[in-house]
Length: 108
Image (cartoon, rainbow, N blue to C red; front, top):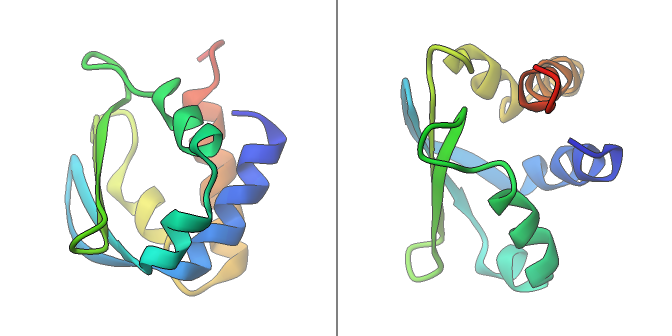
């Protein structure tokens, strides 16, 4: 995961909250202004990490409800990593993001 994307994710995490989380499926709530402000290029970067047999399976944005659902391999990406990433503690979020980047790196 490029360093720029990591920084973007740390910035964006402040504008979302976990609505529902079960292992393998995470729903985040966001402001529609947030998605509107993201360029299509930024959203397309997420596509590069998603595949049906990958660690990130798919994502779906619903701008009507202001949510994004992320389906992931809970055996590879432990649910507590995502809870920390989107939690209140910035230091834990940074550590979780580093763990996630290591998991998603092409050499992993």
